[in-house]
Length: 113
Image 1 (cartoon, rainbow, N blue to C red):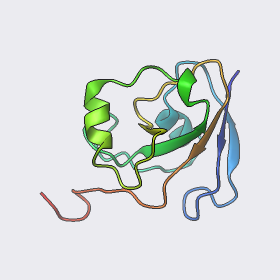
Image 2: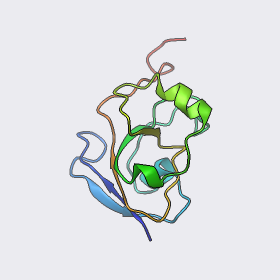
Image 3: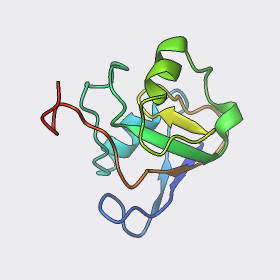
């Protein structure tokens, strides 16, 4: 069973953690199931960027990124070459190292339209 190593995040996972994950699970679902309350304002339908993560190891083993996700990622805070929306990134057989960015952009929460 693959693992997701979550790097420390000041608010969501201060000490970091290691999660055992079923193949085919989204990174977002894995985090939420383990009480790491990553934002997911659109209910995981690939309509926002609040669940943005940076995959530090194992990026190439994830499912292919689709055009809609690529377009949304352009709007994410702290975008890096190995960024994904955690609601769209499905764990395969390889372990991952994931970083949750310090900030996220949530237009609804911040009062923007």
